[in-house]
Image 1 (spheres, rainbow, N blue to C red):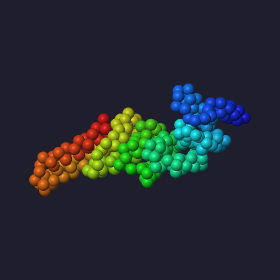
Image 2 (cartoon, rainbow, N blue to C red):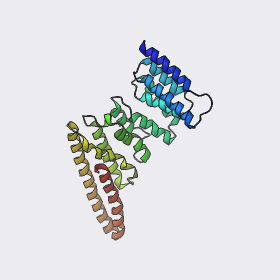
Image 3 (cartoon, rainbow, N blue to C red):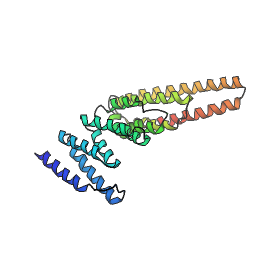
Image 4 (tube, helix red, strand yellow):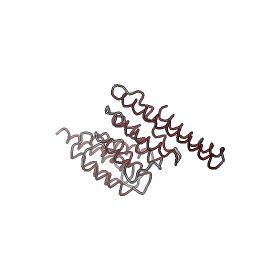
Length: 257
């Protein structure tokens, strides 16, 4: 009874804050939208089926991206079929818009559901995810590691292992691409504050990544030597090695501070 009373009250509050007519970006309208979406969030917090259906309906009926994303963000934390249907609908509608697709990845990476790490791993294999796109890496991996502490710092170290595996892929690309997008691994440096079982995971991950970067430096040195011998142009080879080694050094600094 108390829930349904609260539900009706929130529904009335939400409806009273909705504005008819075209989307307006002014401060007053923005404030009304923010309060309305806060009411929507509070209503869904208990996860009751009626509230979930209500939020899903708000998502599908939204006439602006602010309200649509607000409803999708709320659904991201709800373990219900409506969640998957809404994310599928958003992907179908916006997969060809890079900015909207980045938001699609981020909202899922920030979910408070217990299976978020598994979902993030699956998203890292999604056809629309690529390490060659800095914003896409930021939208998924950085959002998860920097803005979802509960999932990333889980005691079993799964979040750390995910980031380590991603960093290995990043380092492997260092011979072929610039590392502009790979500063997203920065959260590793924050792991130094981990305690208990987490510290063991952090130490293992750190040793693994240091060894990998050291190996890449060695490979680059060999490549510089071979290039210099083959082309008889030591300056050009040294410049190429300098660019690659600088990027790897930056990766090491960003990883470990």
